[in-house]
Length: 129
Ligand SMILES: [Zn+2]
Image 1 (cartoon, helix red, strand yellow):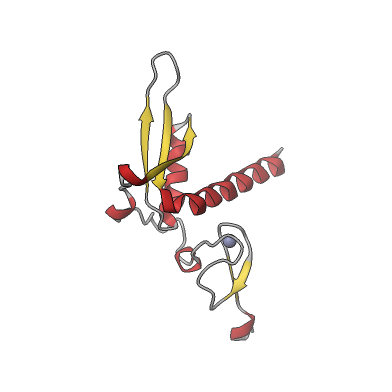
Image 2: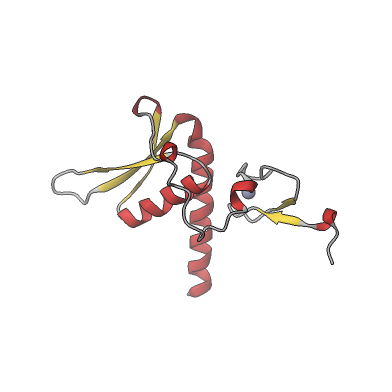
């Protein structure tokens, strides 16, 4: 049996094991309490506050040429309580890019979360091949 001091929670964003009493990952700053909720237990994006990004205070975080990838990234950010919005930019003759917007003050954390997700995805690809 594990004593209370031996229990660790693992950061879902970067995989770092943290003390149970920690609220935020010391490596990537992700909210460890938010991660206690299983991701397949429904997305937390019913919260309307997570669906709206102030157009006057937003930055373009990333662009995706596939809408499903954009929605996956957006779902991840909302899971971490970071509001985000998607918009499509259609340029005649080019594939439509989906732009992922976040508030300027969330950009750094959001970018780190996406970078972690991409690292994880590319790691999985390597395992498979
Ligand atoms: Zn972390």
